[in-house]
Length: 225
Length: 225
Image (cartoon, rainbow over all chains, first blue to last red; front, top):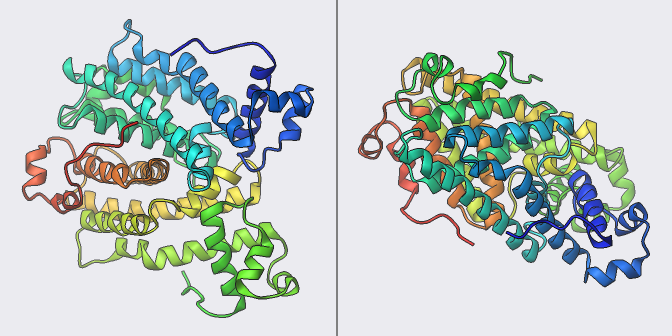
């Protein structure tokens, strides 16, 4: 993937639109608010984008590009083992969500939930991004299976799909319960499951490959009514 | 929980509003559309509901009541083992989603994604519903742990939170990829994980307690770009 663009009016519009759409969704984000935030006239907007839908498509592309550079990059970092890389992905995501006080969630998840049945063009674009992310997880998981770190009873793509959808669900729950506990719960359980059959919790906590994933998980109750 | 109300103008308004909000979200659902669909004047609406937010709160309550009666009830059905009950829950949900061509998703998940950071009252109500559902799963999982059907390495509430958020994530992916494959993948993997360490895939497929969960999972690839 080409390096993400960082400068120019178009990028300013994409960045502002991304922020609004992440916080308020597609429908609640008015173009005028975006124009006001960047300080450009409507004519400039239509120089770069055909429509609000086209704007959203390019925002998704821009978000994906940045997310791949900043967060998903750790999945290819050969200084770490495959499970460590998966854990680093979770910890980076967890940090981003904690910084935003669990309010923003994942732009791709948010727009899927809101727009998948409203716009076929957006749905296809969002699905394309999810599948690309899943394939990055699958490569890392396949490496982990080859070196015996990850359970081989399932295909790497199946585990990757579960990892992706499970993470998206945990992010959604973090947003609805305004706490990172669902993310910590996901990390704790899914890494144990991925490590495979026969792993005892005591082993995991006392120095097996995924012990570090547990460092972030403090004992404490899940949210209650 | 009291039996859900089934008749009257208020229920007609709630049913119509629920349908719009499930398909189009909160912001995209206009009150006038709901009034037109039911054929009542605006005055009647404000007789029953203080505001659109209040309307949404009561729609969530109504959805929860119906969902508990129609779908979550199977978790308490003592004719089946705990794992069978969890499976029946998934199959009932899967059928509902397939009937809707994977477009609607879960109203509670949809509204959480869209509104959790827009309305604190809605967020609290949605979280309350999720926690109640999680507690229903947790009771069933605890029973399964007592009779040795479900892995005891984790607390029933932790497994229930993973089950809930994982299912919501799989529903979101089903919506974005317009296919039930992510649900089948969730069922296949999570039931194996819940059954615990040491379960071989061949055992599971050949007659262990969760074999039936696999009946719905045909061999086939996950969605690709």
